[in-house]
Amino acid sequence: MRRYSEAVQSDVRRRMSPPHRQSVAQISQALGIHQATLYNWRKSWRLQGEVVPASEKDPEGWTAADKFTVVLESAGFNATELSAYCRERGLFQEQVDRWRQTAQDANYNAVLTMAEQRHLEKRHQQDQREIKQLKQDLRRKEKALAEAAALLIAAKKSRPSGERTGRTDDPGRSPEGP
Image (cartoon, rainbow, N blue to C red; front, side, top):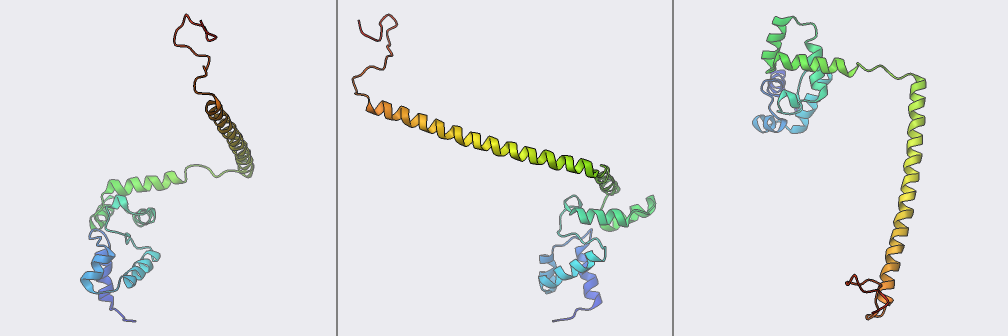
């Protein structure tokens, strides 16, 4: 397996990171490094907590993990530091603020108590039983409808062609005849 210098890895990290955000395929083609190697590097950098987006997408298209990493990295910054951070990575402060708010809102709802959890499970089981019963009723009714349709078709076929059906086009005329 070929070893690459820190300078090459640093160049790759710079190309993958914002604001450049080149794809693994582009970097692989430009530098002649196998894509699997690049993916492994990106994975290890992400595990170290660095912002290395999975693609060249806009920051709004980044994964939740990448957005959360930005929120964590910028958590203690004042306005000036945040501005510099955003410029380095091709972000806007409004994006970071929105991502921070989304992360905070994700934990807004309180965790369910055990009693509430049991109640939800019980309700879920009742719903599942009701759904099962409704499906059985539907199957039974579909079979009855198919049987009724088959009987109607059979009755029409067994009737002689000249026989009246009891229906007349003339309202003054009775079905029995003149």
